[in-house]
Amino acid sequence: MGYAHRNTNYGELHELNTGRLFVFTLSLAFWLKNNLLRGLRIAYKHCMETTKLTLHASWEEVKEKIKERNIGLTDEDLIYEPGQEDALLERLAKKMNRSKEEVKQFIESISYNKDVAS
Image (cartoon, rainbow, N blue to C red; front, side, top):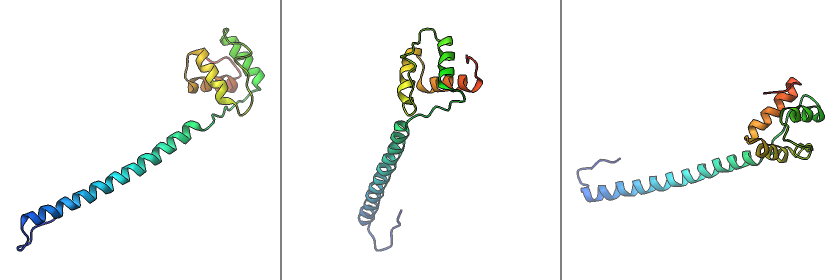
C-alpha cells in the first residue's frame, strides 16, 4: 500500500494505511450494494414478466390432447385466455404436481407435435 519514507514514523504510516483501507472498504460496500440491488431488480423483473405460450395448434386441439393425457384435468382447469398464461400454468402446475416451466414445455410440446407428449 504505502512505504515508509525516511522521515515518516510507522505510526503515521499505519494511520495512512488504515484510512486507505477504510475508504476502500466503504467503496467496496457501496459497489456491492448497488450491484446486488441491480441484480435483484433484474431477477425480480424477470420473475414478474408474464410467461408467453407458443402454440402451434389451436388451444381447443391442445386442450383435448392434454385431457387425453391427464384424465384428472377438467375444462375449468384448462380455461385459457391470451395474456393469462401465468394463471393457467399455475393451476396446471398444482394439479399435475410439476413446475410451471415443465407444464409450459409440456403444452408447447403437444402443440408443436400435434400429438400427445410424454
